[in-house]
Amino acid sequence: MQPTGIPVDPDQLVGQTLFSDIDPSALESIARGGWTVEKRRATRILGRGDHLEGLYTVFEGSLKLYMLSCSGDERVLRILRPGDTFGEAIMFNAIPSPVFVESLSPVRLGYFPRETITKALSSNPKFTFSMLRSMSMIMSQLIHDLETCCLQNALQRTVNYLLREAEASPPPHVEIQLPAPKAVVASTLNISAETFSRELHRLKDMGLIEINRRTIYLRDRDGLLSAAAGLTAKPETI
Image 1 (spheres, rainbow, N blue to C red):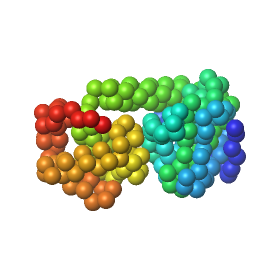
Image 2: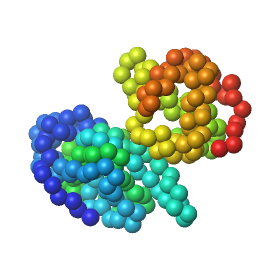
Image 3: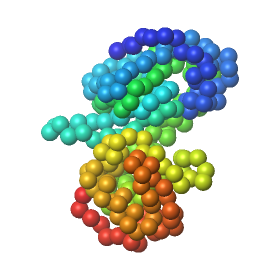
Image 4: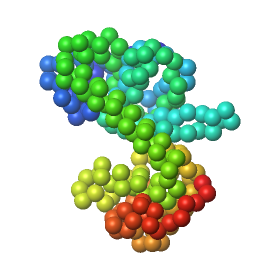
């Protein structure tokens, strides 16, 4: 599975997490070996069982990385946003994809074949370090998600998600834009959309947040921290 498209502009790689520590000449070399791919909303980029001879980085838009149960239920593992990458493990290990990736909005992606990536890794230690750091961060996030699903109730999952998103938002870290519909965000927390919505309104009624469609404002961080610590809620059935 090797898409083609227009060549990547080196300027598109500036600010991308995976390429942030690479000097301009190395960026130009990597860009020459890749393509820019544009897809509409609700387009499947990668299917379970597909082989991928490269990796993708997200320039614009958002995507969901998910699995399907035997009954067809969807479990979203990650919401991919600008700066994120996917396909590394599939490419390096030459294994069929265990997941699906589908666009949540119109997207612009960079695709880089294995040959381009391995050449950059062998010639640029900084890029090797960036790749290791990127894959380690993904592993760390998966471990965190596993801990969340096993040890936290619905309210704690919701609060911890809001606090994590707030830290990643611009100062003063109180305004959150949900990166996807509530049902998709809820799936990343392994709770239903109804439960996620209920817990958000519960926090609103407690005076801890305000909600304006997909924008959420944190009003009482200490109160949210207490909720995350389980001081204000009993475990609920999800």
